[in-house]
Image (cartoon, rainbow, N blue to C red; front, side):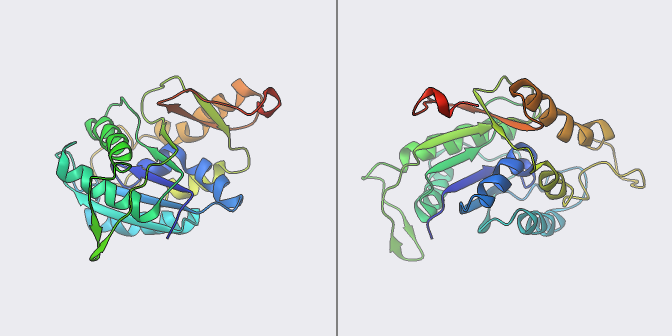
Length: 238
């Protein structure tokens, strides 16, 4: 199955928090989008891996993605090494995306930076003919995505470009709150974490609104890129 966009996240909810509105917009434009979670988030303070599985499935349904998979890497302990790179390569060759979205290059959670470099390296290696992989007994063809973009997470990293997501912010909020165990709940008796405050959940909207303000629209999501952003002509810029 070929996808237009494949989004990777170190944990279930990374993709939703980082770029769910952009994904929702792309799907509305007829693009096929998939999500691959690297871990099951089993080290999360609240909830459990089993609950996160259910929450991730619900979020995927809300967004309308074509497919969602989980590679079950060890939360907190996966590495950017050959074994993990090959697992990512199999996903890239399986879905042959034109665009890959992945974690922030630098962020508060150590898995975000690791996930970012792991996926980025695998995207390059996936295009090498002499790296041989199989999936379900079938030899895979080499494939290298045209673009790798990194969504913004905890840190306010200056984006290289932003996407107008006006009209899609509520879809993002709904997808994020599919992870009911992870975020603000005044009735919860579980331990507090940096993402369980009301300020954090409010930030989902106000950060997108601020980026939108800067480009003259209601809401936007930002990304960083590994290469120059190019446009066909000046009229294509907002």
